[in-house]
Image (cartoon, rainbow, N blue to C red; front, side, top):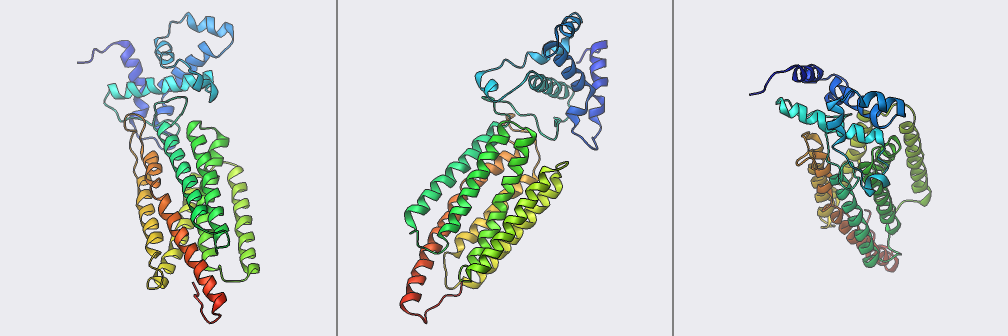
Length: 345
Protein backbone atom coordinates (compact mmCIF):
# COMPACT_ATOMS: atom_id res chain seq x y z
CA UNK A 1 0.00 0.00 0.00
CA UNK A 2 1.34 3.41 -1.00
CA UNK A 3 2.14 5.85 1.79
CA UNK A 4 0.60 9.23 1.08
CA UNK A 5 2.80 12.23 1.85
CA UNK A 6 3.19 15.77 0.62
CA UNK A 7 5.82 14.84 -1.96
CA UNK A 8 3.78 12.06 -3.55
CA UNK A 9 0.72 14.30 -3.66
CA UNK A 10 2.71 17.00 -5.41
CA UNK A 11 3.97 14.53 -7.99
CA UNK A 12 0.43 13.24 -8.57
CA UNK A 13 -0.80 16.76 -9.18
CA UNK A 14 1.98 17.35 -11.68
CA UNK A 15 1.10 14.15 -13.52
CA UNK A 16 -2.67 14.41 -13.27
CA UNK A 17 -3.06 16.30 -16.53
CA UNK A 18 -1.53 13.36 -18.39
CA UNK A 19 -4.17 10.95 -17.07
CA UNK A 20 -6.74 12.74 -19.25
CA UNK A 21 -6.45 12.03 -23.02
CA UNK A 22 -4.37 14.70 -24.74
CA UNK A 23 -5.85 16.54 -27.69
CA UNK A 24 -2.78 17.97 -29.40
CA UNK A 25 0.62 16.90 -28.09
CA UNK A 26 1.87 13.74 -26.42
CA UNK A 27 0.99 13.05 -22.81
CA UNK A 28 4.52 12.74 -21.50
CA UNK A 29 6.00 16.01 -22.69
CA UNK A 30 2.87 17.95 -21.73
CA UNK A 31 3.03 17.04 -18.05
CA UNK A 32 4.23 19.67 -15.62
CA UNK A 33 6.26 16.93 -13.97
CA UNK A 34 8.37 16.39 -17.11
CA UNK A 35 8.62 20.12 -17.76
CA UNK A 36 9.86 20.89 -14.24
CA UNK A 37 12.30 17.99 -14.26
CA UNK A 38 13.85 19.02 -17.56
CA UNK A 39 13.97 22.71 -16.61
CA UNK A 40 15.68 21.97 -13.30
CA UNK A 41 18.15 19.63 -14.95
CA UNK A 42 19.10 22.14 -17.64
CA UNK A 43 19.49 24.98 -15.16
CA UNK A 44 21.65 22.88 -12.87
CA UNK A 45 23.84 21.15 -15.46
CA UNK A 46 23.65 23.19 -18.65
CA UNK A 47 23.65 26.82 -17.44
CA UNK A 48 26.12 29.39 -16.12
CA UNK A 49 27.72 29.08 -12.68
CA UNK A 50 25.28 31.38 -10.85
CA UNK A 51 22.39 29.15 -11.87
CA UNK A 52 24.27 26.02 -10.87
CA UNK A 53 24.98 27.41 -7.39
CA UNK A 54 21.41 28.58 -6.93
CA UNK A 55 19.72 25.35 -7.89
CA UNK A 56 22.20 22.99 -6.32
CA UNK A 57 21.30 24.57 -2.95
CA UNK A 58 17.66 23.54 -3.42
CA UNK A 59 18.54 19.85 -3.21
CA UNK A 60 15.90 18.90 -5.78
CA UNK A 61 15.33 15.14 -5.68
CA UNK A 62 13.71 15.13 -9.09
CA UNK A 63 16.85 16.59 -10.61
CA UNK A 64 19.13 14.10 -8.88
CA UNK A 65 17.07 11.13 -10.08
CA UNK A 66 16.85 12.52 -13.60
CA UNK A 67 20.56 12.96 -14.17
CA UNK A 68 21.32 9.50 -12.73
CA UNK A 69 20.03 7.95 -15.94
CA UNK A 70 22.86 9.12 -18.15
CA UNK A 71 26.59 8.87 -18.32
CA UNK A 72 27.83 9.65 -21.81
CA UNK A 73 29.76 7.10 -23.84
CA UNK A 74 31.93 7.78 -26.86
CA UNK A 75 28.94 6.89 -29.08
CA UNK A 76 26.77 9.50 -27.34
CA UNK A 77 29.39 12.16 -27.99
CA UNK A 78 29.86 11.10 -31.62
CA UNK A 79 26.12 11.32 -32.28
CA UNK A 80 25.90 14.76 -30.66
CA UNK A 81 23.88 14.18 -27.50
CA UNK A 82 24.01 17.57 -25.79
CA UNK A 83 23.48 18.39 -22.14
CA UNK A 84 19.88 19.46 -22.85
CA UNK A 85 19.27 16.21 -24.74
CA UNK A 86 20.53 14.22 -21.80
CA UNK A 87 18.18 16.10 -19.48
CA UNK A 88 15.20 15.34 -21.73
CA UNK A 89 16.20 11.69 -21.94
CA UNK A 90 16.65 11.30 -18.18
CA UNK A 91 13.43 13.15 -17.35
CA UNK A 92 11.56 11.08 -19.93
CA UNK A 93 12.36 7.90 -18.03
CA UNK A 94 11.65 9.60 -14.71
CA UNK A 95 8.18 10.45 -16.01
CA UNK A 96 7.63 6.96 -17.49
CA UNK A 97 8.42 5.30 -14.15
CA UNK A 98 6.13 7.74 -12.35
CA UNK A 99 3.30 6.73 -14.71
CA UNK A 100 4.00 3.02 -14.20
CA UNK A 101 4.04 3.35 -10.42
CA UNK A 102 0.51 4.73 -10.56
CA UNK A 103 -0.79 2.15 -13.04
CA UNK A 104 -1.23 4.67 -15.83
CA UNK A 105 -0.59 3.87 -19.52
CA UNK A 106 2.93 4.47 -20.80
CA UNK A 107 3.01 8.00 -22.30
CA UNK A 108 4.55 9.19 -25.52
CA UNK A 109 6.96 12.11 -25.76
CA UNK A 110 6.84 14.48 -28.73
CA UNK A 111 4.88 11.93 -30.73
CA UNK A 112 7.17 8.99 -29.97
CA UNK A 113 7.26 6.14 -27.51
CA UNK A 114 10.14 6.08 -25.01
CA UNK A 115 13.06 4.05 -26.43
CA UNK A 116 16.10 2.71 -24.66
CA UNK A 117 19.17 4.35 -26.17
CA UNK A 118 21.92 1.94 -27.25
CA UNK A 119 25.37 2.96 -28.50
CA UNK A 120 24.08 6.50 -28.97
CA UNK A 121 21.19 5.37 -31.22
CA UNK A 122 17.84 6.91 -30.39
CA UNK A 123 15.79 4.04 -31.90
CA UNK A 124 18.29 1.16 -32.16
CA UNK A 125 15.94 -1.47 -33.62
CA UNK A 126 14.84 0.80 -36.48
CA UNK A 127 18.47 1.68 -37.19
CA UNK A 128 19.55 -1.96 -37.34
CA UNK A 129 16.62 -3.02 -39.52
CA UNK A 130 17.15 -0.05 -41.85
CA UNK A 131 20.76 -1.15 -42.29
CA UNK A 132 19.58 -4.70 -42.97
CA UNK A 133 17.37 -3.37 -45.77
CA UNK A 134 20.35 -1.43 -47.08
CA UNK A 135 22.50 -4.56 -47.13
CA UNK A 136 19.75 -6.59 -48.84
CA UNK A 137 19.37 -3.99 -51.60
CA UNK A 138 23.13 -3.86 -52.07
CA UNK A 139 23.44 -7.64 -52.32
CA UNK A 140 20.40 -7.96 -54.59
CA UNK A 141 21.67 -5.24 -56.90
CA UNK A 142 25.02 -7.00 -57.15
CA UNK A 143 23.18 -10.25 -57.95
CA UNK A 144 21.20 -8.43 -60.64
CA UNK A 145 24.37 -7.05 -62.23
CA UNK A 146 25.90 -10.52 -62.19
CA UNK A 147 22.97 -12.32 -63.82
CA UNK A 148 21.64 -9.70 -66.25
CA UNK A 149 23.56 -8.43 -69.25
CA UNK A 150 23.99 -4.69 -69.54
CA UNK A 151 22.33 -4.61 -72.99
CA UNK A 152 19.08 -6.02 -71.59
CA UNK A 153 15.93 -3.88 -71.72
CA UNK A 154 15.16 -2.13 -68.39
CA UNK A 155 18.71 -2.77 -67.16
CA UNK A 156 19.18 0.91 -66.26
CA UNK A 157 15.72 1.00 -64.69
CA UNK A 158 16.72 -1.59 -62.10
CA UNK A 159 19.77 0.50 -61.17
CA UNK A 160 17.68 3.63 -60.75
CA UNK A 161 15.41 1.74 -58.37
CA UNK A 162 18.31 0.15 -56.49
CA UNK A 163 20.26 3.38 -55.97
CA UNK A 164 17.11 5.22 -54.87
CA UNK A 165 16.42 2.54 -52.26
CA UNK A 166 20.02 2.55 -51.02
CA UNK A 167 19.86 6.30 -50.50
CA UNK A 168 16.50 6.09 -48.74
CA UNK A 169 17.61 3.43 -46.27
CA UNK A 170 20.81 5.32 -45.46
CA UNK A 171 18.77 8.33 -44.38
CA UNK A 172 16.32 6.13 -42.52
CA UNK A 173 19.20 4.78 -40.43
CA UNK A 174 20.54 8.30 -39.84
CA UNK A 175 17.15 9.68 -38.78
CA UNK A 176 16.45 6.86 -36.33
CA UNK A 177 19.93 7.32 -34.90
CA UNK A 178 19.35 11.02 -34.18
CA UNK A 179 16.06 12.80 -34.68
CA UNK A 180 16.83 16.34 -35.87
CA UNK A 181 14.58 18.50 -38.09
CA UNK A 182 17.01 18.03 -41.00
CA UNK A 183 17.34 14.26 -40.62
CA UNK A 184 13.56 13.98 -40.26
CA UNK A 185 13.02 15.94 -43.48
CA UNK A 186 15.53 13.86 -45.43
CA UNK A 187 14.16 10.60 -44.08
CA UNK A 188 10.57 11.40 -45.09
CA UNK A 189 11.57 12.96 -48.41
CA UNK A 190 13.81 10.07 -49.48
CA UNK A 191 11.35 7.48 -48.19
CA UNK A 192 8.82 8.98 -50.57
CA UNK A 193 11.44 8.90 -53.34
CA UNK A 194 11.43 5.09 -53.02
CA UNK A 195 7.64 4.96 -53.35
CA UNK A 196 7.66 7.36 -56.30
CA UNK A 197 10.53 5.48 -57.94
CA UNK A 198 8.50 2.26 -57.70
CA UNK A 199 5.68 4.03 -59.53
CA UNK A 200 8.11 5.38 -62.12
CA UNK A 201 9.63 1.94 -62.71
CA UNK A 202 6.15 0.49 -63.22
CA UNK A 203 5.37 3.12 -65.86
CA UNK A 204 8.70 2.73 -67.64
CA UNK A 205 8.34 -1.06 -67.67
CA UNK A 206 4.92 -0.78 -69.33
CA UNK A 207 6.24 1.77 -71.85
CA UNK A 208 9.68 0.29 -72.52
CA UNK A 209 8.80 -0.34 -76.20
CA UNK A 210 7.52 3.20 -76.74
CA UNK A 211 9.54 6.12 -78.07
CA UNK A 212 12.44 7.58 -76.13
CA UNK A 213 10.78 11.00 -76.41
CA UNK A 214 7.62 9.85 -74.59
CA UNK A 215 9.62 8.16 -71.85
CA UNK A 216 11.80 11.25 -71.55
CA UNK A 217 8.79 13.54 -71.11
CA UNK A 218 7.33 11.28 -68.42
CA UNK A 219 10.69 11.10 -66.65
CA UNK A 220 11.05 14.88 -66.68
CA UNK A 221 7.51 15.30 -65.35
CA UNK A 222 8.07 12.90 -62.44
CA UNK A 223 11.45 14.41 -61.55
CA UNK A 224 9.93 17.91 -61.61
CA UNK A 225 7.05 16.74 -59.43
CA UNK A 226 9.42 15.22 -56.88
CA UNK A 227 11.59 18.35 -56.74
CA UNK A 228 8.49 20.45 -56.05
CA UNK A 229 7.25 18.01 -53.43
CA UNK A 230 10.66 18.05 -51.73
CA UNK A 231 10.49 21.85 -51.67
CA UNK A 232 6.99 21.66 -50.18
CA UNK A 233 8.20 19.40 -47.38
CA UNK A 234 11.12 21.76 -46.70
CA UNK A 235 8.99 24.86 -46.19
CA UNK A 236 6.75 25.53 -43.22
CA UNK A 237 5.37 23.03 -40.71
CA UNK A 238 5.74 19.40 -41.68
CA UNK A 239 2.33 17.87 -42.43
CA UNK A 240 2.63 14.21 -41.40
CA UNK A 241 -0.93 13.27 -42.35
CA UNK A 242 -0.70 14.76 -45.84
CA UNK A 243 2.69 13.14 -46.45
CA UNK A 244 1.26 9.75 -45.47
CA UNK A 245 -1.72 10.25 -47.79
CA UNK A 246 0.59 11.09 -50.70
CA UNK A 247 2.69 8.00 -50.00
CA UNK A 248 -0.36 5.75 -49.84
CA UNK A 249 -1.84 7.23 -53.03
CA UNK A 250 1.40 6.83 -54.98
CA UNK A 251 1.99 3.31 -53.68
CA UNK A 252 -1.58 2.32 -54.52
CA UNK A 253 -1.23 3.56 -58.10
CA UNK A 254 1.99 1.60 -58.46
CA UNK A 255 0.41 -1.59 -57.11
CA UNK A 256 -2.69 -1.20 -59.32
CA UNK A 257 -0.48 -0.78 -62.38
CA UNK A 258 1.36 -4.01 -61.62
CA UNK A 259 -1.88 -5.86 -60.85
CA UNK A 260 -3.28 -4.90 -64.26
CA UNK A 261 -0.03 -6.02 -65.89
CA UNK A 262 -0.12 -9.33 -64.00
CA UNK A 263 -3.66 -9.96 -65.20
CA UNK A 264 -2.76 -9.28 -68.84
CA UNK A 265 0.36 -11.47 -68.91
CA UNK A 266 -0.73 -14.26 -66.56
CA UNK A 267 -0.64 -16.87 -69.36
CA UNK A 268 2.54 -15.67 -71.10
CA UNK A 269 4.81 -14.67 -68.21
CA UNK A 270 4.55 -17.13 -65.31
CA UNK A 271 7.06 -15.12 -63.29
CA UNK A 272 4.39 -12.44 -62.83
CA UNK A 273 3.69 -14.18 -59.51
CA UNK A 274 6.91 -12.72 -58.10
CA UNK A 275 5.84 -9.09 -58.40
CA UNK A 276 2.29 -9.96 -57.36
CA UNK A 277 3.57 -11.75 -54.26
CA UNK A 278 5.83 -8.81 -53.48
CA UNK A 279 3.02 -6.24 -53.43
CA UNK A 280 0.64 -8.47 -51.47
CA UNK A 281 3.27 -9.18 -48.80
CA UNK A 282 4.36 -5.55 -48.77
CA UNK A 283 0.76 -4.47 -48.11
CA UNK A 284 0.60 -6.94 -45.20
CA UNK A 285 3.90 -5.59 -43.84
CA UNK A 286 2.55 -2.05 -44.09
CA UNK A 287 -0.36 -3.05 -41.87
CA UNK A 288 2.13 -3.14 -39.00
CA UNK A 289 2.16 0.66 -39.19
CA UNK A 290 -1.49 0.63 -38.14
CA UNK A 291 -0.51 -0.91 -34.81
CA UNK A 292 0.52 1.35 -31.97
CA UNK A 293 1.96 -0.14 -28.82
CA UNK A 294 4.76 0.71 -26.38
CA UNK A 295 8.14 -0.73 -27.41
CA UNK A 296 8.77 -4.31 -26.38
CA UNK A 297 11.75 -4.27 -24.00
CA UNK A 298 11.79 -0.51 -24.75
CA UNK A 299 13.33 -1.29 -28.18
CA UNK A 300 10.90 -3.01 -30.59
CA UNK A 301 7.86 -1.01 -31.72
CA UNK A 302 5.47 -1.38 -34.67
CA UNK A 303 7.53 0.89 -36.93
CA UNK A 304 10.76 -1.05 -36.36
CA UNK A 305 8.92 -4.34 -36.97
CA UNK A 306 7.69 -2.93 -40.28
CA UNK A 307 11.30 -2.23 -41.24
CA UNK A 308 12.16 -5.81 -40.28
CA UNK A 309 9.26 -7.24 -42.31
CA UNK A 310 10.49 -5.53 -45.51
CA UNK A 311 13.95 -7.15 -45.33
CA UNK A 312 12.99 -10.56 -46.85
CA UNK A 313 10.76 -8.87 -49.46
CA UNK A 314 13.67 -7.13 -51.18
CA UNK A 315 14.86 -10.29 -52.94
CA UNK A 316 11.37 -10.89 -54.37
CA UNK A 317 11.45 -7.60 -56.27
CA UNK A 318 14.95 -8.10 -57.62
CA UNK A 319 14.27 -11.74 -58.59
CA UNK A 320 11.35 -10.48 -60.63
CA UNK A 321 13.50 -7.82 -62.31
CA UNK A 322 16.22 -10.38 -63.07
CA UNK A 323 13.84 -12.81 -64.77
CA UNK A 324 11.93 -10.05 -66.52
CA UNK A 325 15.09 -8.47 -67.96
CA UNK A 326 16.39 -11.86 -69.08
CA UNK A 327 13.07 -12.63 -70.77
CA UNK A 328 12.90 -9.22 -72.44
CA UNK A 329 16.41 -9.67 -73.80
CA UNK A 330 15.51 -13.04 -75.34
CA UNK A 331 12.40 -11.50 -76.89
CA UNK A 332 14.49 -8.62 -78.23
CA UNK A 333 16.86 -11.07 -79.89
CA UNK A 334 13.94 -12.99 -81.42
CA UNK A 335 12.41 -9.75 -82.68
CA UNK A 336 15.68 -8.80 -84.38
CA UNK A 337 15.97 -12.26 -85.95
CA UNK A 338 12.29 -12.60 -86.81
CA UNK A 339 10.68 -9.15 -87.36
CA UNK A 340 7.16 -10.62 -87.17
CA UNK A 341 7.78 -11.89 -83.64
CA UNK A 342 6.59 -9.34 -81.11
CA UNK A 343 5.56 -9.25 -77.47
CA UNK A 344 3.62 -6.11 -76.61
CA UNK A 345 4.20 -6.17 -72.85
